[in-house]
Length: 508
Image (cartoon, rainbow, N blue to C red; front, top):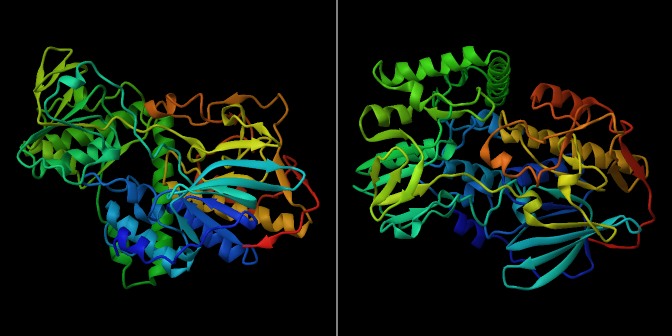
């Protein structure tokens, strides 16, 4: 079912009175938010919860992005939920299929009845005296309402939905063609038989180029510096071999763990043997593009493998587009836009009818929501992340933040499981507040994300820090995190638990 019909068929949402209270308020109805709701229903069935979604439809990223060829950059056996197997044949799924998967999951478990669309959380204020958050919400109709909750669960992603990153180049106003950012893709854009330049070298660019090359006159991928690219099959042979031999759930479990270990092996190998990994990746590209192609120039980044995310291309579609002459790579820098295209630093001119600026995202935490604790504004950039999901000195709040070197959902699922463990622990011991306290000075601050990607570096003044030791240190390792999140003691001496008498309340 399409997203418009889905939203239209959702139950009518009455006005929410100021007094309405929920045990847990989830912000965001994307992949993370729906997964969080499932775990709450299963592990904490006595808890009341509500999902607030700023947009008018479910799906988050997978409803927002509409550019040609939009797809996952992780395999669906790990990007899919652990509790609901991915049953489609494609491993690297397209955006509409992922959106449908999220919609069906929400509908199957009744989560869709707990979503309030068009409700943007603007400000959240914690009161230690009441042990609750007050969240100020704006409706799409322009109305405002306040809700309260005992625990705030942020599943709003990590980037600004309003706009992507645009560097800004000289002469952009001179260009007579159309300039498009993938995050704001016009549905009526006609690029058939036109000359297209895609500026960028990341996951979005390597997706756009082969997709647009199918109908465009020619597509040039213009990159200031290359990325590492790895060809993967769009179908999993082991999954197909297992089909019919074992139950679908067991097959999903086996292939999921196979892919988890493969991604972990690739990451660890790249970090330990960067030069061998570089040679291996470049050798694969050379084999795909032929002996005369200048792989060193166009596929040899200045950084080591996995200092930034690898770009995965299903069935080598980018290589096919280049080899067939429908697309080409240019590694150069922009001097200025011209009336008919781009003038590069080398003096080369690129003629274009359409220019796509696949230049990345703008990071934004908590969906841009303002945070206060006992009337004091919170600057998360000054905080330290506990287990990559809570923040020092911020009570009763967790964020879903996926892996940078593996599937987002692997960490989102673990975070949801841990939040449920935490809530149940607090109930069992009579606590209603939990606050990670900043560690002693022996645990030093480190950057939150160990990547050199531009969108990470641009957000260093926004992101919280991580610590040099557990539990403030991020593993970026699903196996280690699984052991810690599922089996380690909740009361590890880092979180301060307390009890504040609650005021009488009505349940949502």
